Amino acid sequence: MKWVKRIVIALVVVFAFFYMVTRPEDAANAVQGAVGAVWGGVQSVGQFFTSLAS
Image (tube, rainbow, N blue to C red; front, side, top):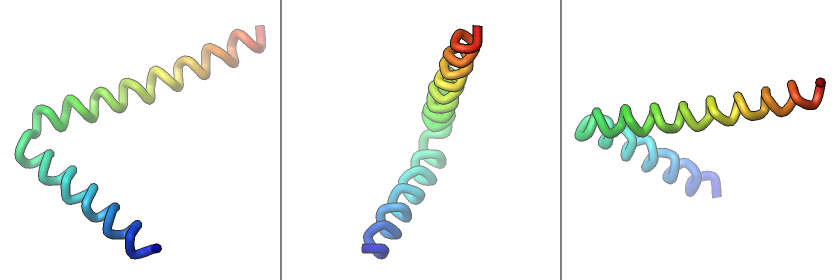
């Protein structure tokens, strides 16, 4: 089962590299969107704990 996981990870990395090389602007937008989503989640959790402490 480990070899399947390694193959899947390798395919994802190769696809990401291919996408980054062939469509750099779209890849940058995808990364910005993912980082924005994570940051929004972190802010929401912080707001939750701030409200909880009040």
